[in-house]
Length: 435
Image 1 (cartoon, rainbow, N blue to C red):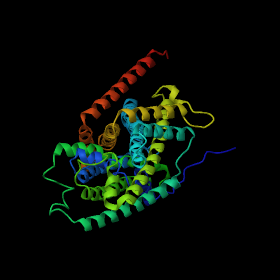
Image 2: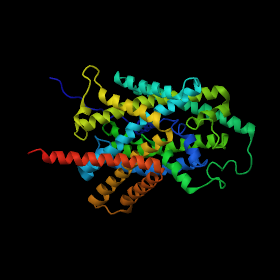
Image 3: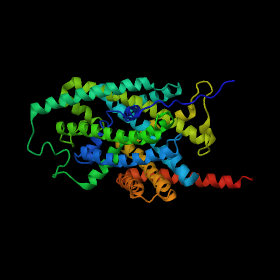
Image 4: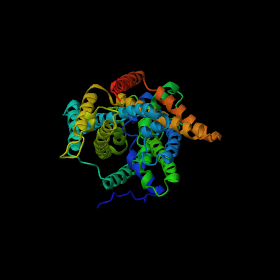
């Protein structure tokens, strides 16, 4: 008679932090550098650091809720556990927007990067190619190896180190254009606008998306009660510091933020200016490879989220079907592929990123609310810290969410409205079924 296996508690604090950095990727701020630079009028470093504060506050709430729900590790479980099925459903609905749009923006970015190598092929055809690539890889059940991801992350760190060295040589050779040159990436009085920086922050937060995945390893951590919280916060901190360094260097090399040859792949052109054609090709190829991996993995996660919500009854049962031969939710993969292609053909990278953050930040507000409710309201622990951190986290996340451009908020509210209609129809149908 066979017995069910158990997960082994083998992960240390260092292992958890390394996992978080692999998920987020060392090159995380580079794909959105140009878009944020134009929106924030050259203040990318400032936006990244402000977003880091919001993420660290939310990371504390994630870590604390992982202690209560150690086997779930998701905003859906936290909200459902504290506020009931309705809270869980709408959090899951918001997260679904996040998951569906990740392959979409990866399709857009990969297409722009590929066009840098082969400009003769129209970008629209590259979008078709990458949407089909992500779909076919997932239909075949191809999963990224954790071992390969580790070596890819190490390789990307090496590329970042080479790039920063090239930028250092470039800056030494070209000098500065005045005493404010070195501080301008943080604050440029001639271009600074608080509203523009706020909009930039709402996009720059994409740098940190994925940090919450650490909470899914609660059952494999040696000391989850202590290390999940620490690892989540430290991952956000290390990511923020590295992202700030990369963006600071990029802005020094290319201060004219309004003049990128291609805004979606702006950092590739920064690399080319600092290190010549070889560095241009190295960074463009590295980011293309990393984004292909992200697009494939995110489509896999999106398809499985649809499957999970289908089996739980939150979505129609057709999403709960699995191809018996390949063992993958093939219908869901096709849905994700269609969304990726249709979205890539009809929206910009910026709008896709903002819509993704629309769903993500709603979920982050929910996690902070769940932490406040569990520890301060239900637990009746009236120490200021029990309330201050989740309240600040929720407030900053809500502010960033509200700073999204009206186009993203309009599309996001349409998505929420569809969720409300579906939820009410489902409840009404259940009441009609006799007990």
